[in-house]
Length: 308
Figure 1 (cartoon, one colour):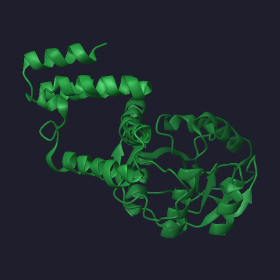
Figure 2 (cartoon, rainbow, N blue to C red):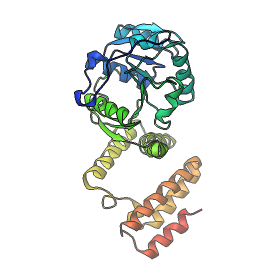
Figure 3 (spheres, rainbow, N blue to C red):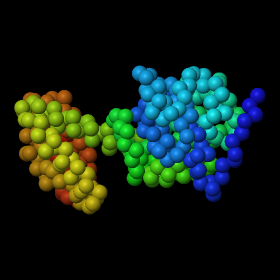
Figure 4 (cartoon, rainbow, N blue to C red):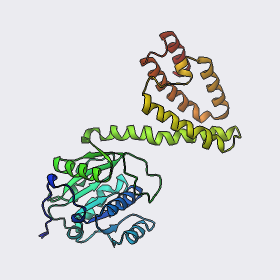
């Protein structure tokens, strides 16, 4: 029988970090970054569990927390804020483990950081409805376990849950220095897909450019002093001037002969990149057409080259 309750949280009072001892279950890159940021803000770290490769043990030692094992017995008595950050495929399993042993009383919050899964996936952890359930997704790549405590400043955090959960997530995002945006569960996959296209897509394009540089026996400076600064300049231009006006390159100039040459050299040296090049230029062509940068005849010629 669960008889523990935390004080009722009211949005008007904001979040007082010392009143929210937290635990992190399944810490990976996001979980480690968020746990460090919470501890820096004054949230007491009481328990870290799950994960592999000694990550939980190392993070617990770093934050002065206990290492807790599945089924996380009595965790609800010690942690008012429980953050679940395992891979998406293991999230429901972690939630069920919490239900088996954590004994969640009233007045706390369960957070998951999945971009695609809804907050309702946590219902199996709290079948009595004692905690409020929050999906809290930072729209940023976390490529390593960087210890920089400023990783959440000025980024977008997608928040999904009921009104109480949203207000808590909004307050937490602002404490972290982030920009909260409310999501409904039915748009989360589209929101995440946009992020993958933009953020992971940049990494994929950098890899493709590096691959081509290697095939031309160009030195490493091709990437570090050419491609990467150019990518940053392109992003800055989009931010400063916006699309479609900032669009440049052979599509915006209608240079079909240049594009034909690119396709030829790619087919000879990097055939695995031909499809990627075509798809990117087809998107570029749509931008140029909608922005009025090329006429109908030129667009038709470019489609003939790219729509294969």
